Image 1 (cartoon, rainbow, N blue to C red):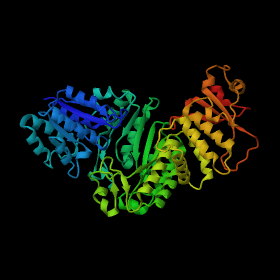
Image 2: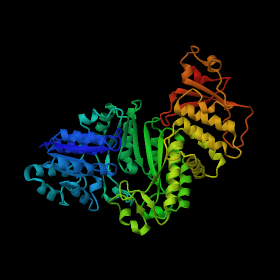
Image 3: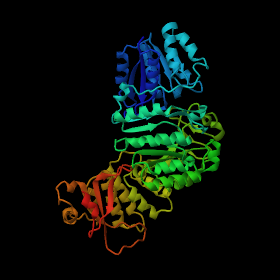
Image 4: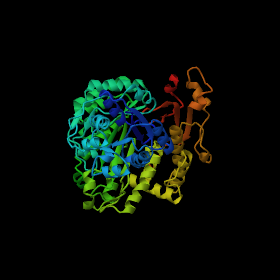
Amino acid sequence: MKTVLVAINSRYEHEGLAVWYLKASCEQQNMPVTVQQYSINDNSQKVWSSILEEQPDIVAFSCYIWNRRNVLDLIGDLKKALPHSAIVVGGPEVSYEEAETDFYSAGADVVIKGEGEKKLPAVLKTIENQGVDAARELSENLNLCSDPVEYISPFCQEYLSRIKGRIAYIESSRGCPYRCSYCLSSESRGCTFFPLDKVQEDLEALVDAGAKVVKFVDRSFNINETHSLKVWDFIRKFEGRNVTFHFEINPDRLTDKQIECLFSMPKGLIQLEAGIQSVNPMSLKEVFRVMDVDQAIENLKLLVQKRNIHIHTDLIAGLPYETMESFIEAFNRVYEIKAHHLQLGFLKLIRGTRIRREAELHGYKFREYPPYEVIENKYMSTFDMLRLKGVEEVLDRTYNSGRLIKTLDYLLLYFSSPFELYESLANYMKEKGLLFQPVSAERLFNTVRSFAKKIEGMDLLALDSYLILDYASSVKNTNLPDFMKDSEVETPDLRELLDPYLEGGWKKEYKKRFMIISGFFPQKKEEVFKGIRNRMLIDMAEVCPVTGRAQTKPFKSALYPYMNNV
């Protein structure tokens, strides 16, 4: 029998892991299967046609929040076109709260709940030998293959041939010891750590295959000190291989040894994602999130100050007992970490989670379709959420993009808090019809400039200086943007200033590599320098592996030893 495993990923760059685990498990049982990978952005006719062309006897789907609608539509269409083919579906979206009803109604023959590595081969074998009805009965047996899953590498040659320049996923453990009520992992029991030698072999294979980013999907990577330290020490060998490793951590649980290890990591080799979610004790207690917020923030500040690791922090809007006032407090406190990315997310009431089961308790109204995002609750109105949506939009475009970091630091001097700055900018963009609209980099910078020029007491020379510095450093363009043609900021002649300090003399290509900005770069609102101007040099060839921005340094005309290494 010919079996096709179908994965519909959220984006092309992301290569889903589940179907490759299932393929490895089936083939270990001498049951060959074919994998078909798509993204939700693929043309539906392309997906439909390519599955039909396989003329499968069995089609198995892996269903998640992002592809639920796609999968349901495909099941219905396939059942009409291939009535004698069996359709099997599994994944988080079918595993809880009688979710199988929708899939059976659409035309699915068998629904597999929970981990599928042992269950799918058993179901496929039963379909082949006894038929679909027997397979459905087997799948509904709650004790089917309930033993812990043993590690089977999903990284076959077919997978590795697809991963160059893309994002790969790997897990060194499965499950989570925490019980956060909004997370599906809270429904699992215990945490299983996979053999490190096998994980290390797979890491070697992924790096050799050219993966751009390797994301560990472990829910709380640092909870086992010995395990995490061994993995972190192992990946040091990949320095200079043009790969980054991503880990999700509990920042308050970082031990002294773990922090020391992270301090010594090669620059840009790893990224850390740390969920703070809230600083409201009542909210954290209600969702069973165990965290020492003060310790978490302190540890993250230490890591950011080291400047060798990209730090990503998370906040969730819409948690129980979280008012607008307490959320603003959380935003301002977490912003002080100065992480490279601050994700302002909104609560999703995912099927199977305790918070969804208790939705009425807190007056939740949420979207009935994926991703089941909160609309309002007892503590925040719909318009409160809309207000935060504007802040999220502006935060992502200006701060999380890494484009306007220096400018935002300067603008913050004119506001009482970070939240006030971003909400003011969101309101301005809304007035201009630019909120939630596509905006080019140049137009974004010009919009921020127009917004800032209206701020009382704004130093326009300092504003333009930081904007040009950010623009050149993030866009990596040595030409002054058109909207800055009226600025008092100057870009002096490169050759005249650099020639005395260049070993081997001036080269024509330096014109596209370097940029000198002569402007005003105060660190305080009323700061005064002894000179009229100060200068910054931007080197487009030296890109920070942590921020992705071109290197900037103060330019000293009397002495610039850095240039001797050009």
